[in-house]
Image (cartoon, rainbow, N blue to C red; front, side):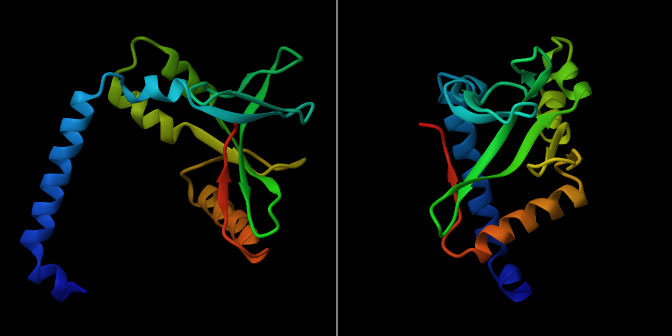
Length: 163
């Protein structure tokens, strides 16, 4: 592998530069920033108190206010595997600090981009599961194990999107 990288280093660098240029041009020519596009995308949400599922904009910053007026509505990621049934694999929300900073007009764009990843918390569905940082080793381990269970059930694991 190392030999191939050394042999084709100029090609790899050239492809990376061209890719970066294409990305810069397409982002520069876009009429809408990425956050504007996400506003029109939908996502599943689940109320942690009632267990009810709903569909809202994917651009929302969970937790949202649930029926009780408390921040209990979190994003729910659904997948399907071999049996064809939709399963909520994990739930997601932002930490209170991340939401505060993301909503602040004083937070710069680089910090906001960082918070969209570092401020995310995840947990498995079900009673008693704790919220963990999504990008932490334990958070990644839980996601890997959850998807592993789906794969053992057979078939291709695919995301489910709201219609």
